[in-house]
Image (cartoon, rainbow, N blue to C red; front, side):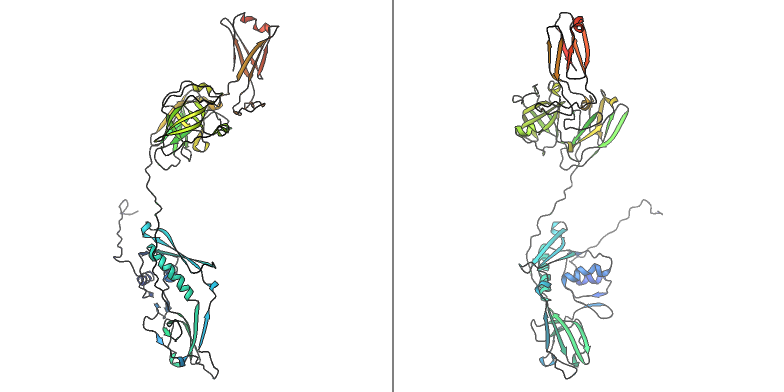
Length: 521
């Protein structure tokens, strides 16, 4: 690296005091090989390309700078007055054959574009790319595209596009004249007036046939159209300050139907600032740390502002409401009808209870009042008791949450999620995603012989929906229940492999004649 290792190298750029002329740009870019008298100006020009020709070609084409090789440099056309050609000079011939005074050709309209699009850099919009469009005919034939790496105002770009299209239509005209030996000195770039409209013609090519000078001409016409244009609005790229991350851990059943092979915990993340990108986090517990990242979408995350009272899971709760506040006040909660609720819409977790809400009333500043609730979804009816203000609220959107598989050994321990900025959240991991659901609708009957029949309804982590006349799928590696019959003096414990069990009277003898409690787990 040498003696200057670690030093800061600075340099200074000096801009032109006035907008540069096209001719000056061509001369600078070609190291003087191009000597053009083009007096048009641009705010700036990016002369880049694989060669000098590639760098300056867009400028030459856009401003129609006629360049001719004089053997030492490329020069502009003569800027003097047009050379008058007398009528009797036209139609010269090197033999006795008569030649036409003028040969005039015109290309078909379909050979030139009907629309021209010019792209450029617009200083009024922070030098973002702009486009000016010029149209010559309503009949769409073909379209031309010109990329000009120059900085122009919207009005100058629009005027230039109109001029370029007008020149291309004017260039449809071609004129060939045959002149006497006195015109042998005529060369490309000369301006002549053969007495044919539009008057001034530019010599494109000149050949000698005998003592006859054959000149191929094109119109020497420079339109000066000036058109007003609006640059439009800038596409803003604001600098967004990254706000602190709000993190939460969710330990809930996989009500969406996930197929995780082991216990999982879900990481939810949000922030109060606009803009969002996935952020690196670590999930840690006793003796283990897992590196992961948040979801690519911001979670709809917040907290409860009021206490949600207990209610059963079997009917729509039209009595209780709960107020929640979102971390990002720009996010929104929407209401839905009963059909949408039945389809699983508006599924959220509040504390440890999974619920759905049919009505979300905005209260302002990211706050909403949730009503018309379906409670205890996914077998979390046990969590409907014990709510408090400050409970974590999060919409259960799989695309905005990051599940993390944890070992079974972490069950019952404190799990923490933390990002690089120090934001953190923790909870006691109960592995709710792996907990089998408690059976429901337990019933017990005793027949005349004293035998006890206990029945119940199975529930499954793979079948949360109530489907008429269809049993819930097992959803576990095997189906097994523990049935406990207890009194104040004795307990009988049995197992069953289906949602019913018949207990013989002899097995109930140790319980005596007391009132018994039947528990199915």
